[in-house]
Amino acid sequence: DTGVSQDPRHKITKRGQNVTFRCDPISEHNRLYWYRQTLGQGPEFLTYFQNEAQLEKSRLLSDRFSAERPKGSFSTLEIQRTEQGDSAMYLCASSLTGLASYNEQFFGPGTRLTVL
Amino acid sequence: GQQLNQSPQSMFIQEGEDVSMNCTSSSIFNTWLWYKQDPGEGPVLLIALYKAGELTSNGRLTAQFGITRKDSFLNISASIPSDVGIYFCVNGGATNKLIFGTGTLLAVQP
Image 1: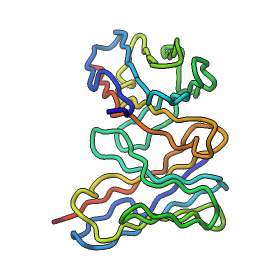
Image 2 (image 1 turned 45 degrees about the vertical axis):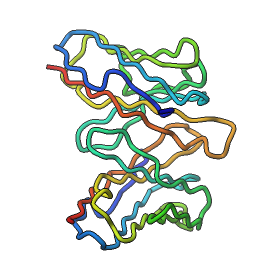
Image 3 (image 1 turned 90 degrees about the horizontal axis):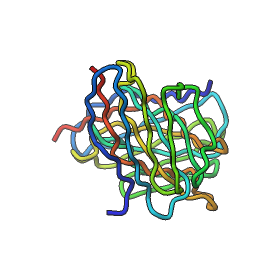
């Protein structure tokens, strides 16, 4: 399977703990995006990378959130001191620039975070 | 901010029926995308539209980019049970981030 993969698929944690999620994009895609989706809503943009550079961050991304893409391949999203309001599905997507179809982002299955 | 309003909010139909849903925006966009999301999974890209007036098909799905560039519709012909899910219209553009609509929940009864 050469699609976007995310790990873990589910994470349950206690309030105040730190969590880290991983995303592996489609191998030739140079852009990687993180979105958050709460129940009953569409995904909302958090941040994106072109290669290893983080080029845009949403105001939804508080200072407890940090994302990295150290070698321009996989990415990690860390949430420090989790709060119950962080409970959501965290989605990763990737796309390829240089084509008119760069908006065509391909999503992974998501990581469902539950903060108790 | 930008808002994409989808209608209807939900649809409950019989297998074999045709489905039509639409999406309107307060702003002009250069790209319309339609995604489908199954419960507990990530959205899957169905159709991408890049020109005003463009009509594109993908199997039983047909989508059009409105001439005003502020709307789009998606039709599904001869629905089947696996069409169940949430359908999102999505705007893309130079900002790189996708903006998702409010979603249309489709339920298909066999």
